[in-house]
Image (cartoon, rainbow, N blue to C red):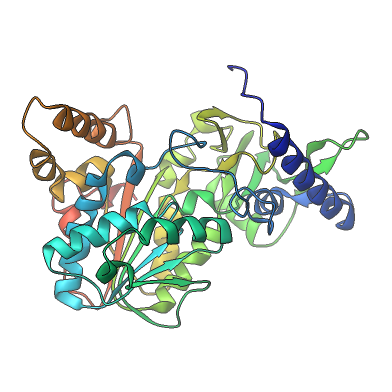
Length: 384
């Protein structure tokens, strides 16, 4: 692995403050916390966690880049799907974890062009830092668009329209479990005598996590993740949605691939300054922690809440179905710098070696007679 960049003194001091907070939580819990609790603190501890504090996370100056940051044509293509639902069933748009606000800005701009603006564009963002960035981004829009933006701190009781989430599920805290020799272990975090963070396992003999590990993981030795929080979110969305579409973009696999024997060390990844590595204890608060999504598990959780599975496809197929190449054709004249830049960006979104195959799109509907545009070709529901 290449050496990771050194943080500046202020960032290093911030990480030290979060590490001290996590150590205190471990001590208060008797010397051990689950990895899910560690991940929650590292990402979301108020004022200290990666998503709760002030470091810039997205784009070339951050730690990773998302599809909306690559090209506005991503948002333009997604808008075609959103517009189809709004024309048929009405309602608002609710974006979960809106990041920099770029997707919201691109969606509103394109929906205005299509004549299908929602009355409200709701943004559910628990991070004060990211909320401020989103507000600054969306304040640059024409007033008729920016006035539609409303920030929420919790899901509404009832909702009609389109629910969106781009790279939301992978950032929810996961449990780490191991199956070996007829035994089930839960991985957690303890402290070494020097006060450093270290992996520590405890046996699991009963409970929901034990049952899920037995049902999902091969006999082992096998280490992987289970994301109960993502499954709970889908159940909550099912309870909330009165009519409309739920649409998630993320990287992951159906269960048969997620728990493939070759993936016996799990999918946990850490992102720091565009470097990927596997040490979740490195500079807490300055790096993102993620795990791939088990799309079969979230599909089953959504079904429990009465949502109807409508589509599962690669990001490439979804964007092609939604007309991203037509949108590209309108980006300057052929051979111009504008067209070349747009083409390179779309290639990143579509190419199998980039985001086109790794990222998947999954959708559910309720009270909506619709075969969603984004899944007209390449729908792979059979893989779930």
